[in-house]
Length: 428
Picture 1 (cartoon, rainbow, N blue to C red):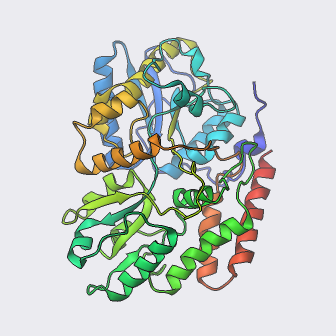
Picture 2 (picture 1 turned 180 degrees about the vertical axis):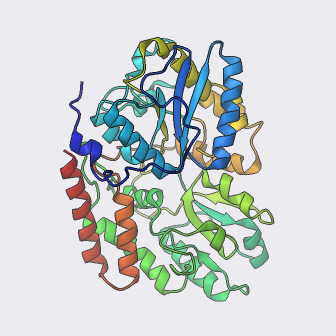
Picture 3 (picture 1 turned 60 degrees about the horizontal axis):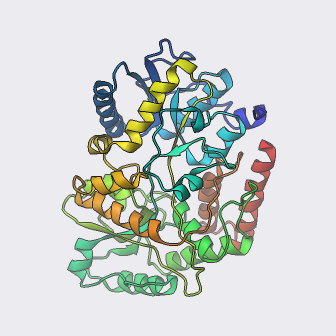
């Protein structure tokens, strides 16, 4: 059993004493009150909450004796609540794992090994998939979806403007196309939202250059030059007028409702099209894989997994039902028919195939690009180490400092890496 690190557990969260914005938090009082109740914790928006409540109603009808107590929160509030519950030993029986905290939770012994869940059915998964899901050689969380980095583009705008994003683009040809489009289209549109803070795109860039976001032993896997090259790329586009400005997009992170009808393309995650496209129903959107450097390594592609886990705190008499909950979530297409693919394509290959007949056009785009990356050669990818959970906030601040002219790119890149390294060291 791992020794619990109080520093890792409580670091950075002492100011979050009042956990506001939580909803549907039934059953938050330690171990489940009865053997038939499974506490399930997740995050999202109101639409996701409603969809999952409906799916869980259907699950309860399908699984005899099951009652689900849903504990729901917005993403940041979810993490704050998890930290409080970790300290108190009251984490839900089944819970989603925020990517920045996968290894933090592991370091604090939060996961029950799935080998202890005797009724969990993993027979649809190839052996290499299961090996890829493991943390430190053990299957103790279960990815329930996959998404990958993409460029989403407005196919309606492209048709109106008589352009087509290059089919086999490099980062250089994308830059050339973006500058030309932004300067010459008649509608005053920009080619790109400024996406310097897109973490999946940044990782895609690094891996093409033989670097990693994180190393296997829990350290920063990229160099100052690797980070600076990414920041320089986006600064060049911003200064050339090929992207929206930070003020036009309402911050470093582009606000989609603000810029969705003003840009041709945006970097993001493959699942984002499902929530974002309906906000502009007059337009059709499509997905492309991001550019590939001419000298990219062959196995740079990767899959990004949201994960579920069963808590070490779950009562032993609850485990059989918890296993059935996981089975329903990952092995039944009925679940996805209700909740959709907003969290990504199914990890279960059989369910992914079955979902094709029910998927919307936007969901089919998600399924397509994930299947293509899933079939490509991929080098191992490592989860964020304990203590690195705020690295994306650090990156956002770094990008803003550069855009405001406060710090040159090389110095900003060095300072960002130092700050992340210091946070990881404090968590150890």
